[in-house]
Image 1 (cartoon, rainbow, N blue to C red):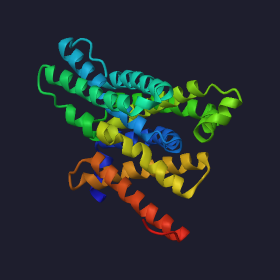
Image 2: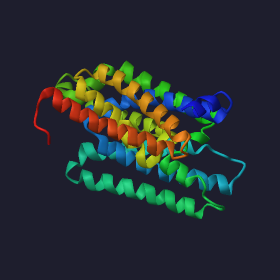
Image 3: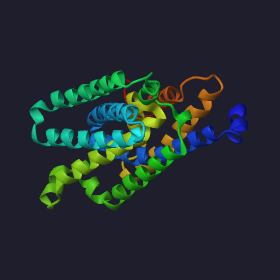
Length: 283
């Protein structure tokens, strides 16, 4: 901890990493709450893994056309939104085979990314960073991308708070009231996709679904109000990401993995504590 605070004043890469932790937590806390309440974490997991295809395609394109130099996060964002729309439509209109299609999107997206990266000229040094996160390599440009995604996601989520609240808790009632449930559901999945992109730089593709859902899951144990869950979840996301960064610095271990370990242990402790408060049977 002391060494991290000393180096934080001197090194820009640590300042960028800390800022990325805070920025990504806003979208994560808000959208993660919707994901947990709506119980669509498996859909979010599929979207998060599919984006490797977009990242791999951009890396391949940049290697073939060096003058282009497109940010891989833009490829990730485009792929995530497309995957969200496809998965959303399947879940709405093909429920009997929903799990099969979602699993196929999950695996095909990752396989496509691996093929592109394998055919990219040179050594694919960025692959591990995208899979497991590399927050210490976050640039000012990445911060701007995350910040824009934050503003976009948070604005839409808060403006249409009541509509999303309705489809999360009582979809049938919302439909009877004339709400376009399908459109709002697809919008929610698209916002989830953009939030996943923001989290990729923090904990990577493989673990971002955990950071998206665990803080909100902890918050939901102690509150039934959606806006309170969002507030608590955002605060927990900030605590988990910054703690993971700080605690991993001196022993030189991956910050993303450290963040998820802290989140997972906190969730387990929260479940036990909630059981003790309610005096229910421990399962």
